Each structure stands twice: as structure tokens, then as C-alpha cells.
Image (spheres, rainbow, N blue to C red):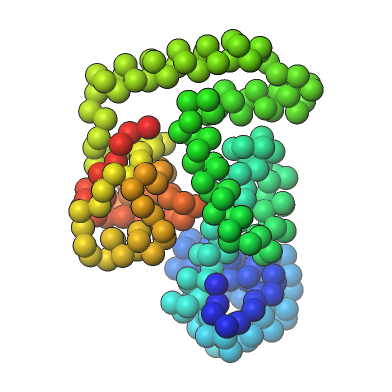
Length: 251
């Protein structure tokens, strides 16, 4: 968030669009921004001038658009708010992805950070709690559609206990702790400790990540480097040697 300044919802939308374009194409062009936001080029020009004045972007008329370090930090903050809300709507409330995107776009500009962080923690809790998980979400979705649960509570509790015993047995047969670079896409782990003291450590600490925080591997490059992860709603790209300094407990 921009310290001492208030950005309008429209300005945040522009930063978000520019950030996505820069990620995909290294730079953003006025026509691409207009297409992304479904506005005319003259509107884009005015917005870019305002963002330049706030030192959020580098822009010259008819030139390419890039983010300043300040602008990139602000843009990634907006994207995080959007994705946390979208994931909560989809993963917890079983809202369809289209409606979730629309809702997230509207709410990302006004949600207080205290509530955002609580949503992040709740999604993590649902994913690791033995009484939560995908079956719990499916049951909630069924309840919303039919007004009743899919099974009796006693049966649900018994099933959770059986699943927990099975997971504990499986974990007892394999190495419970490993380093982040050993996880495959889709796997999750709880951070146990971070050995590194360099830039990666600083980035993670700045995100408020502490031992016990859930981190997931989203994508691994063909040669194993870099590794794209997600933690506390943030996207974090790590080199393989950086990921090897992070010890996690597989969940």
C-alpha cells in the first residue's frame, strides 16, 4: 500500500493490470492495458499520468510502461488481496470461479487488512484440520444446494477419525520433514525453520511468515529452477538452492 497516499479503486485496477502484463510480456503497452481493463486508450493515458506522478510507474507518452519498485510492491499487494478473497470464495464458500472473480474485484479495494489476514488463516486452518478439507467443503456445498448435509454428524466424525489414523500411519512410514525443494507441484508443507540469512529470509520475514505457516508449491520450472510457491496469499518465486534452506513438514 502506498504510504501517506490513498489510491482509488481505479488506480489499483490499473496497477494490477500492469503487473500482470509485465509478468507475461516484461512490459506493458497502453493498448494492452486498455484491452485488459476494457476502457479506451484516452482513459488509460490519464490514469498513467496520475500513477507516474505518484512514482508508481515509469511512463512516457507513446512509450512502454513498467512498474517502479514502489509500484510493484503496491500492485502485488492488490493482487494478493484479490487472490485471497477469490480463494476464500472458491475453496471455502464453494462459489463458482466466475462469481468469485467478480466479488473479489469489488471487495479487494475496501477489505481491512485485519480481516484479510483472518481469511488467510481460516483457509489454512481448513486445509490442515482433520475435520476440514475437501470433503468438508463438498458437504457445505451440498448443504447450500439441498438444505441438508450429505451424512449424519456421527458418521462424519467417525470418517474423520479414520482418515486421521490413516494419515498418521502413512506419515509414520515416510519422512515427515523435508526441504521445500523436494515438494512436487500441488504439495503443501508447514514451515519448520529457515536456515538462510540472505534475501530469501528477508522476503519471507517481510511477509509475516513464521514457523507453522502453510506453504504450497504451485509450479516447478522444467529444469527444477525456479520454484513458484504460495504462502499467506503471496506468490513467492524461489531458486532451488533457496528452497533447499526451508525445512517443511509435509501435510
